[in-house]
Structure formats: structure tokens, C-alpha cells
Length: 434
Ligand code: ADP
Ligand code: ZN
Image 1 (cartoon, rainbow, N blue to C red):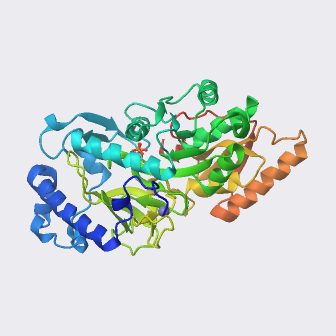
Image 2: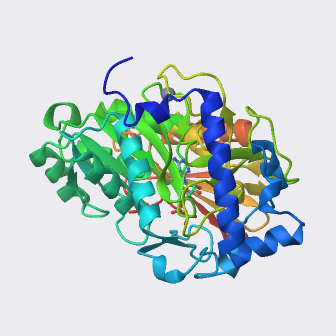
């Protein structure tokens, strides 16, 4: 093993049995804390006649009722805090992709845990103190910007807190400062790459960028290929959510074979979203997390609505913490069109497999389940021949139909005609629910 490869070698490479023992010990402490200090959890436990002492093995976790998004909304803003609110030192709120914001309250311990976790993620990606990290996730209530910032700070890297917007200036800064790592949403990275091309900047020659840390929204392997091909950087996936801490829950290692979940801080399960039944590792389902070390707003069996799969095979990197397959989407992102279940990711995969297609697209559902996909052409995607456009349109329709079983309308638009999201991209406009 390479010396200096791990941020915390002992924990990251801990034998699995030891890791499970550690999880059990922390789980029991966490459950006790929840029962004693949170009226919310005490009610839940009492409701099913469960006592903290009933949690004797990791398998007993199943006895604990789920916590769901509406619990946080119903107990907005401080009802989920275990203990007194004067312990709170920072607050964040989810970007509200789906409905009301969810507020995350952190005490000093939670801030330390979060910072440590993001540092571990950045280090896993290869970030070191000599790196210059350009953070183009939004700063503010959203956990992306500040989360990466805190982690990079712990590593001692040079931080450029760019936040969103002013794309040209961001690129100039990257060039002039010699930035080595960029962190942002994958959709913003695609936009950055395209803007570089338009500005005549060759990221391979003109920039020192080596790696990118991309997350906060689902992205396909096609987008990864595109980013890597266009910029020459190595793309890493990072995952997290406000309720659990923000970014830092899980990250890809150099093997790019799933995202390691930091199991000394979280227990991850997958369940059947319809029945709540716990699925065996390897089956795709909804991710459910229990936070083991966060004390201000602990989450027991929190249903994320994110869909993925737990990989149990050993990772070549030497880390023993289990991995998540790429998050394929949220169960609430799933579209039901003419009785067929479709994830926006499926559509993205098809679109991005066409080199003539550009970075930006939007899926519009209206009327009686009519699906229209408005998609931009790549900057050099149109050779001026109208018949080529018509042929591309037909090919897209056929491929999309084969993938989703629904025949969409496809509108091809000139590059740059759709609005660019500065934070998370909004890909679906469902007019049926308006
Ligand atoms: P929200 O988007 O619900 O307003 P957050 O800002 O807390 O709230 O974002 C967390 C959500 O973002 C996750 O639940 C997940 O749906 C999505 N997400 C975060 N990272 C990734 C990733 N690497 N891949 C796919 N989805 C992600
Ligand atoms: Zn690994």
C-alpha cells in the first residue's frame, strides 16, 4: 500500500468485523441519545414499544421506525434537534429541489465531524495541501460550497471560494492561479468546459486542472466521459445530503468503482421503496441512512428517496467501507408517463451518447402525458444541412423510445438557447402537476 494514500488509514482500512463492532457500539450510544434527548424519537420508539436496550445487534436496527422527509418538514425548524437549541452553531437548508426547505442544525461536534468527513473525501480523491481547490458549488444555505470549503481547509489546501456564476471570470481565475482541483455540480462543469472551448482555452494546455469533485445531482457515465474527454481531468463522484451533514457521506476512490460510504459515521441500508422491506446488498433500492456520530440532529433510518445499490465486493484501493453504485436518481424524480416509469437519467444517457448533442436539455411533460425533449446542439453540432438535422431528430426519437418505451417529441435548439442553472440543473418541467 502506498504510504500517505489514506486520510485516516486505521479507520479507512479497518477489518470489516471491527468496523461492524464499532458501528454497533456507536449505534447503541446514538439510540440512547435519541431516546433520552429527543421528544420526536421517544414518541417513535414508544409508538412501537421499543426501548434503546432492545438494540443489541446491528440487525436490530430493523426494529427502529423510518424517519422520512415529512418528519423534518412537520417538525420545522427545530423539532428534530435532540437536546437544547442553544447547542446549534450553524444552520443549513436543502436547496429545495423538491418542495419546502429542510433545515439542518449542527452543533460544534457535528461541524467537526462534517469537516473531517469532507477532508477524508477530498484526500481520497487525491487532494493534498499543495493543491489549489476551486469551489464552484454555491456558498450559503446549500451545503455544497461551505462543506467542500471546510474539508479543503482541514487538508490545508489553497481554497478559491468561487461559488456560482461569472463563468468566464471563474475560468480566468483557474488559469491565472494554476488551479489543480475543481469542485462543482457536473452540469456546471460541462458548462465550464464548453465555455473554455468557446474562449479558445485548452484545459489540457492552458490549465493545471487534474481532478474534479462532482456531485449534488445525478449524472450519467456519459457526462463523465464527456467531461474527461473535453478537459483531460479525472472526474470523481461525491454524494451527500443536508439531512446527514451535506457532502461527505460518500465518495469515489481512484478505482472509480462506486462511492465508499464512511461507515464509521453512517449505517447504510437499501429498502424496497414501496414496501419498506430491507433488501440484500447488491439489489437496487432506496438508500436509508443512520447517522452514528452527529448529535444535534441525529437521523435514525432516514429515507433519502435516492436510488442506488450497495456493492459489497472488496475495493482494490484497500478501503473496507462498502460502496454505493452511482445514484441513479430519486424515487420522486421518477416520471410516470403513460403508465411507464422513466428516470430522467435514462434520457440523459441517450442524449449524451450523440456527439452532435450539446450540454443542456430539458424534459417537458404536458397534456395527456406528452413528453417533449428540448435539447441543444453542440457548438459544432450543426453543419448547416437541414436534412442532417431531421435525421438526427429521428435517430434521437428512436433511441429514446427504445430506452424508455415512450415516443417523445424532440426539439433541437442552437447551442446556448436554454437557461443554464448555476446550482443544480432543473431537468424536468412537469406541467401536469402545475
Ligand atoms: P435537495 O436537493 O433535496 O434540496 P440537498 O441540497 O441536501 O437537497 O441535496 C441532496 C440530494 O442531492 C441527494 O438526496 C441526492 O438526491 C442529490 N445528490 C447529491 N449528490 C449526488 C450524487 N453524487 N449523485 C446523485 N445525486 C446526488
Ligand atoms: Zn476504493
